Every structure is written in structure tokens, then in C-alpha cells.
Length: 550
Image 1: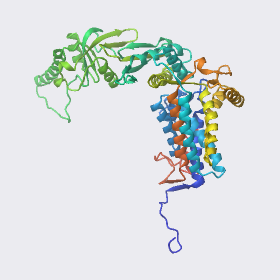
Image 2 (image 1 turned 90 degrees about the horizontal axis):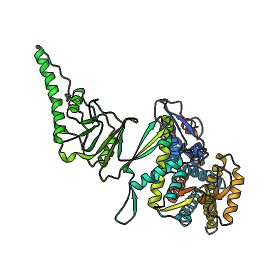
Image 3 (image 1 turned 135 degrees about the vertical axis):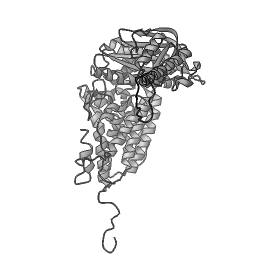
Image 4 (image 1 turned 120 degrees about the vertical axis):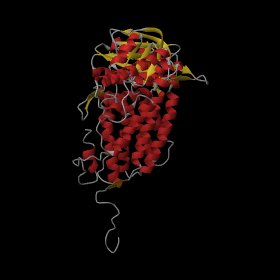
């Protein structure tokens, strides 16, 4: 106060939400994100259709894809999305589980806040529970021989189940395990390292997923630039070029006055000579095949065909980067400075039916997974599912620990955490118990999404675990409680550890906030559209912010 008047320290447009209003705001936003993806969890999860502002349609039940594609305009919601992105980067799968658990932790924390338990006690309890859960996961996990292809196939099948790969998941799992095996190397310490950079994924429409294939080497989905060019080359010297084989353009606009037709012919002859020199340079290097990232002039195509050189233009940058490893070449950006050592070596063959070039190199362990599907949407979802499965198998090979799926690990963890809670003093004990309850969300949602009674399912699961059956989980297809590890529902331990840790840290981050100060609208989108501006009350940003979500 200054002479009886309030001191204004914030601008008129700024907004502030404090104490319980801030907690309610943050928890509501985080729970809205979690509930948006819950229905996609498990083999019986439903898909979401996402339509962006340009009208592009994405149909998926992959948690991180849904959250990235949704038009979310809320700072707290974006913090929860980071949980999914971190889970995807670190484990490759389990994004929906991580986000769903984070939302349930905040829901249970809200009940504790209503009982006047301080956020600091809840945060400490969640942290203790998270650390204990990691230890219990390590204790429960089964160590496997990373060369055991059957377990790896089961892990891949579990990851792909429910992601548009149902009919062909056994066949695709075999391809995935073989692909991972081919890009696995042993480091100096004798540990297996999976280098997925040497694994490329290409997609084709118009065929069944069962016709997908694993190919040694790389694929280039292009045609030869000239009909008279050879379509294959064995033991070929291969040039990877990031320079156009075209007439060089001037940097500035110029005008030339021509008074004599001979002058015009001189210009044309000079252009022709320039192209001839470029092709001669390529031929002198000894290149048999040229994969060019940029354009190739029509006349240059003719000259290349006369030299018997196979050329492809407008190749993708990612293809060139991959071929660089396959054929041990350097990507050339300037033809004049290119040397013979920049060339790679390998075989190039043409598949006329699929209109593809197959490129194989010597001693390279790079492989290409060619995924086929009936339509663009089908093949896109197939690629997402296969990418997750590849990451999961790679993690399993590197880590060597697996768990029973179908909610078995969550129910066992919840039981052990409740026992652990008895040793925790103070109000933190209630937070540990709330953490245990939150983990049981996974089997409950699996049951709900399969059309089963979630309460009966949870009771049966708890009873089985109380009897000592650590691997008792839910078979969502029959509704029975069984040993899911024996049934082939296998998950990597690392992914579960990461999901529990990420969920706990995100929940604690949200709970620690007691004051939100915004320079304007409580949203992350600062466009010209003011319709999303917050209304009266502390929850203003939720109306416009989460409107794009729900």
C-alpha cells in the first residue's frame, strides 16, 4: 500500500492464479491430457482420428503421436506431454501408460490436498514410492539370454498388439527381431549395443502387411532418369552427390542483349559444354552409379546414358545418409573437388515390379525394413507400431530384463508398495499408498477398454498376487486372470521403470506449483485469435486452452 492506494506491480493484461486455484488449474489440465489417451491403452484400446488445420488425417492409438498432433494450448498440459515424449525417447513404448499414471497420481494427490495434507509431504511420498518401485521392478524382472529369439519375438508382439498389426504380428515380429540382430554389435566391454541408425524403414502402399520384407542394404524409391541407362550394376563404384548436374545459375539477375543469332548459339554451346564437363568429371572419377540429391538436366541425362552411367535424381537426403554407411562413400557437395576415394562400392539392382533400387555394400551391417500396407493410413499406423517394437526389442537386447505384462507388474508393485508404506512415517505414508493405488489404474483401464468389469478384474488380480502368483495378469481376449509371461505377454523392464519415474516426476513438478503468473492469456499460443482468452475466475486458460483437446 502507498498512501492508502494499492501498489500495482503487474500489467493490466497479466493474469495470476494462486494457491488452491493454481493447484486445481494444473491438476485439471494434466488430468484432461491423461484422460484423452486412456481409452487407447492395451490391445483392445480404441483409435483416435486427428485432423489438423490443413485437413490432414491421422488415425492412431499411439499415445505420443496423439499428444503431439493434438492442438493443445495450455502450459501445464504441455508439461504432461513432455512425459510422453521422454518415454518415447528413452524407452520407445509405454507412452500412454506413463501419461495415464501421471494423471492418476494427480487425481489421488487432489484427494490428499482436500484432507489438508501439504504438497511437500505428497511430493516426498511420491518420490519415495517411485524409488522403491524401481527397486521392486528390478527384483521382479526376469533376466533373459539376449540371444533368445523366442522371448524377443514375444516382446515385439506384445508391443505391436492393438496397433493395427494384429493379423501379421507374428511375421512382423520375426522381421523385427532379425533386423535388430543384424544391427547389433558388441562393444569393448562385451555388451550388446543395438545401432538402430543402421536400420532404415521404407513404406509402400497397395500390398498386404504380410508382404513386408527385410532387405540387406538400402532402398531408393526412384526411377532411372533416362530410358537408355542400365538398371543394375554389380561391383559398382557409387557416387553420392549433393550438387545439381545442371547449368549453374548466377547469384544475381542479369540481362544480356543479343544482336546476332551466333551470339545466342554461343550461349547455348557454353551451357552444353558446362554440362558435358560435369558428366566427364563423373566419368573420370570412375562412377558407375550416381545418386543425386538435386536435379539433373535433360541434356546431362543424355550424356550420362551415353557413358553407361546409371543416375537417379531427387533422392531423399535421409536415403543418401543411409547409403553413405551402406557403401562406405562420402557425400560429395562439389564435383570439382571430388576424388576417387569419395566413391562407395556395392551392387545396385532394380525391382521393376516395386519400382525400387536395392543397394547392397560390402561388410556393411545396414538393413532396410520394407513395410507394406493397403492404404496410406494403414501403412502409417503400421510404421508407428513397428518403430515402437524395434525400440522395445533393442532395449531388451541391451538391458536383458523383461516382465510379465497384462497389468501383472502394476498389481504386484502396488501390493509391495502398500507393504513398504507401513515403514514410512508421517503423512508421506498416505502419499505412498496413493502411489500404489495409482499404479492399479493400468489393469483397470485394460479391463475397461476390453469391455470387462474393472472392479471384478482388479479383485481377481489382487487375490492371485496375494497367493504368490507374481506374474498373474489379465488376458484381455478371454477376460481370465493367468500367468501372462507364459502366455507370451512380455514387456521390457526398462520401459516400465521409465514410465513410473517419468510419471512421478511430472506429478511432483505440477504439485510444486502454487502460483501461476502470466503476462497475458494463460495459454502457450500467442496468435491473433483472442477468442480463447480466459474468462472470469482462476481457471480462465482452461476454456480456450483445452478446448482444442476435448
